[in-house]
Image (cartoon, rainbow, N blue to C red; front, top):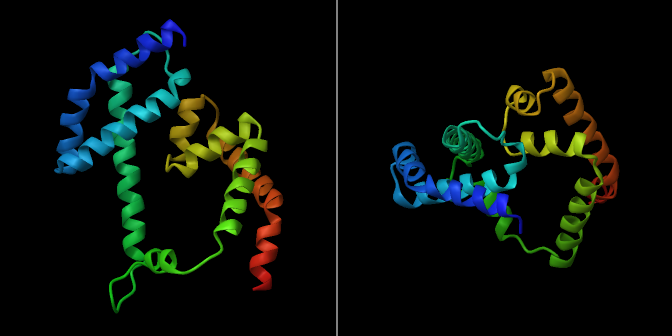
Length: 175
């Protein structure tokens, strides 16, 4: 492992306590705050190459934490809208309890990973960022490209994924 990446990781973890305090102020729950900090640090490590040397690392981490919190909140809000009116059980919970063929599901996950990995970086990165809940303008700022280019790349990535995973849409249509 490179010394620079070890230094970067050490710097990241030096801000853990201040991130924990900020996360708690957002979540009002110790466990949720710890999870939020962990997600933030993982994203920071994953996207370390996009951090510009000489800029405010703590500010960058706080932005990641805030965006992660907002995206998680949006995701939870969407889940609540899928609640059924009678029993209050989420549709996803019902589907999770249904019996299914685990072999078929593993194949589909492998195929999804293959399809994603077949995308060039120009399409993969904006698509993944959008999938994680980032807004078009946030992706455009991070990649330093026009917002129209971001939208086009995400659209093209969707079309390529749809084409590469067509076999599953055909299967679903037959059931």
